[in-house]
Image 1 (cartoon, helix red, strand yellow):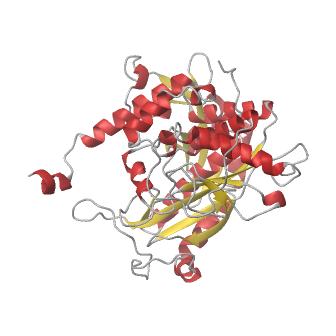
Image 2 (cartoon, one colour):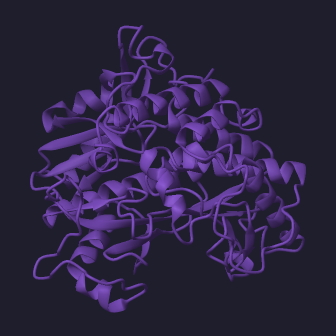
Image 3 (cartoon, helix red, strand yellow):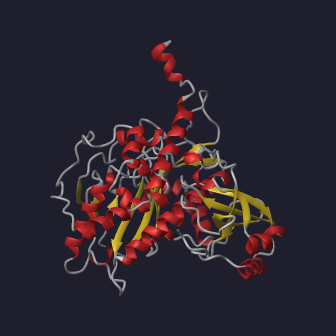
Length: 455
């Protein structure tokens, strides 16, 4: 069980100090980060801010385990047989920021849900699960430094005639028609949008450090600086997704982080860079004996990859991403090779690191980070050997052990004794039930292509 007040809370003084610097604020968005990496909560009038920061805010305690639409599936009876009780959500220290992209002057703050009676963390909360895993790493002398990269497409706010999404056009531009991988001109054409991204990130103290045009037509990637706090890094990734979508709306566009929004285009990935530091903050992978330590970390990531796949690819669409190029479907690793699951970039010393390339951009950054760090911890503690680097392009097609679809991945997840040593087994069962329910709701309708096949 968790002790009360395990997360540092923002104070009423924090709120009032913020208002002195932002006297025009009219509302505040108070949101949790749910199991999908979505931000869910309430927009409150500024006059309710004092109550929020002194007493918290109450809403459904099952909100952290809503499905991708924000609807309850009742996994393990939560939100169904228990009467759907409220929890109390408390503002988190350091997360109070202005929302630069909205018309009404608005603030935002991450809130953390607790049991309304015991004031303890909810055992199924993704942020709490990552926090506990990081604490376990630190207790074992494993201190990760991490950073995230997120890919997305800019799309039109209007859907096509059959409800499909379509590429969007920035003001004064036409929708892109060709791929422009690493094109500076493509980024320049979207300069106003990315300047707004940079300005909003600076205002919200998000450590954005670069933007590139990606392989897909109309696809981009935004990178975040590395930090020595994996929980903060995962928060950064969620807040960056919220920011990109918000800024896109201010340009009359949408942004999608779907793992495979266009069948003929590359998917969107969430790539996580990991290194380990010593007590002096020096990169252990770049030090003497660091190569052996790096190999152990890769070996652990390999050992947990397939058991964790339902966290890295959490829905029906996520699985489609594994049909594309530069998307790993084997446990291979290599140096400076983007076709493998575990890439060691061409960098030495303080920049020596592992890039974990398995997750889609729609995955929960907190659960993705927890699964990755579980693998690193497992590999380091057991000195696992990852085998020889691939030394070439990874083969197409899945390993025999690679789960064949979402349902197979969920079964493997909840039955994994190995992953259950690092993440709560009850949570793995709950997550599997949640995602099966979401999948069942998705497929209960008739897809348009079914008429072409079966009518």
